[in-house]
Length: 99
Image 1 (cartoon, rainbow, N blue to C red):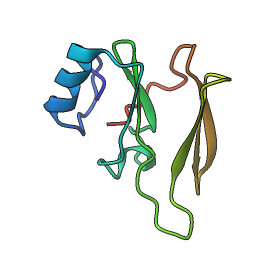
Image 2: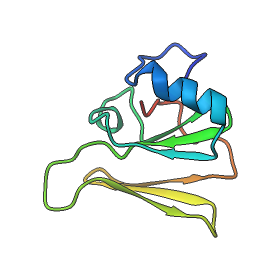
Image 3: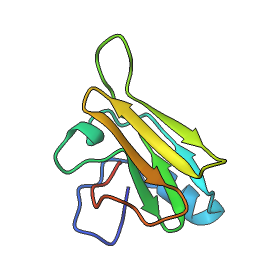
Image 4: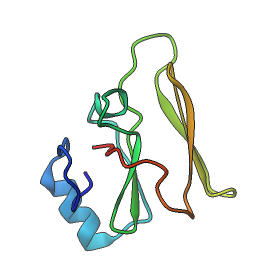
């Protein structure tokens, strides 16, 4: 979903326009299945000042998921690949897009 970088766009333009218009702090989505598990994909990204989270699709007894801790301003992604964290009050830790 990120713009301004040379990346593949997995999402559609309606959510991007909605984010540009309403400027929420955080958007949780799960529509796009592959990005976190692709070499160029990731589970969290920025669109302007908005964080966009997509845990991706994981087959197995426990789905990939993201825990949002607003008190600590921390998002943690859990999957069969392990866990990754992103401080929501800091810069993105990855240059990989989530959508």
